[in-house]
Picture 1 (cartoon, one colour):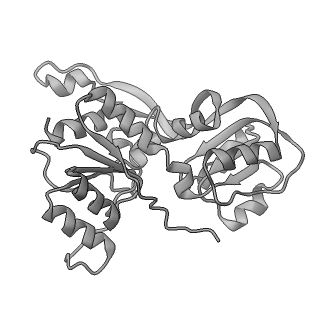
Picture 2 (picture 1 turned 60 degrees about the vertical axis):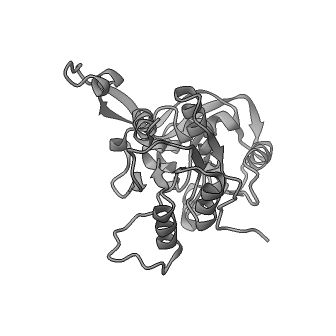
Length: 278
C-alpha cells in the first residue's frame, strides 16, 4: 500500500482541521506516493528514532509531537531537528505528526488516558463541533454526501468504579503512568470519584474541570501559581508531559492494525522523554 493510503486513514480518524491554531500536525517530511515498508510509532522524533527506523527498514515514522513547529530558511544540521530532516530525506523516510488533532479527536489521546486510569462514562471535557466529510465522500467525490457535524474537543472526564482517597488515587496514577514524580495540590481529605484529564500541557482546562465539579484533574504540566489558585478547589495532579501521552502510540497502532492488517507497525524502543529524575 502507498504511504498516502495510510495517512488518509489517520486523517479520517483525527482530521487535521481539529488541530489548534499554534500546531503543525500532518506530513512533516517525505513523499507519500511510495509503497510503505512499515511504520515506526513514537511520541517524539529524535535522531535515535530516525536511526531506529533506518535499521528496521521502515520508511514511515508516525509521531505525536511534530518535529517542526516553525519555518526554516536553511537546513544545515545545526540542531537535532535539522539533522532529523536531513537523515529522513537521505533515507527516503516520511515523517507524519498527529498532535492536537489527535488530542481533540473522539476516542483520541484523552480517551486512552481515561482507559488507563480506569474511568467509565467518559465524555469530552470541553466539547466543540467540527465539520467532517464522510469516508464515502473522500472515496467517491462525484457523489458527495451532506457533511455531518461531529462532537470533539479538549480533555475528557469520567468516573472511577469506586471512590478512592486522595492518596490512593495519586499512587494509582503514579503506578499507571510509571511517573518518576507526581506533583499535586495539598490534600484536603476529599474522596476522588469524578476525574478530569488532559494529556500534555493541559492546565488551561482546570477552570473547566472545577466548573463541572471534578474531584481531581490529571495532566502533564501545571504552572506554579496554578497550585495556589486551585489548591482548595480540586486535586490538581501533574504527572509529566511524556508520561501523560506515552500511550498515544497504542491508539495509532490499534487503528493501523484494524485498517491495514498486513502493514508492519513497530513502537519505538527509545524513551524520548527529555526530562530526567534523580
